[in-house]
Image (cartoon, rainbow, N blue to C red; front, top):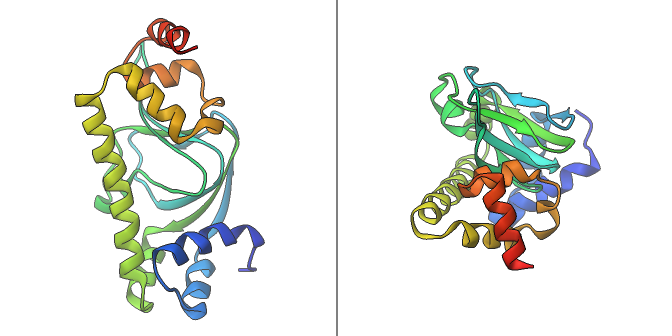
Length: 194
């Protein structure tokens, strides 16, 4: 695969985690495939098995449980981070939720089999895999604790503080679902803040 200048964000991400040799990096990037998803496209449909671990070059992604009368959004993923229905990816079992592009997205994806090839054939494959898994786990734990400890207003303020530019591109109904309220309640919270 021809090296793409856009891959520098992934390379930078890895270099912040650990020293990665040029040889290991070239093997890793040879396994990546570029995928584009338009706004509102399903990246992974509920009931399907996750095939990829993806790095978000551009865009915002949401994780949601589709319901007939209300769509429950429980996580977002932003640019320069990894995204996956990781439980499905690891277990090779169908996913119980959907992964959707909120905005136009560009992803760099590596398949389950290719990632295992990286683990087996590079000096730092296991370390990178562990760091990616740790990052996903820490985000999940932070979210769970926030749901138990924080008010909806505090969850909204935290999201604004962490991703101020990107938050403007997330529809109100998804933000409301994410912080655990209805859109009308989020409108009231936003009025209190302004």
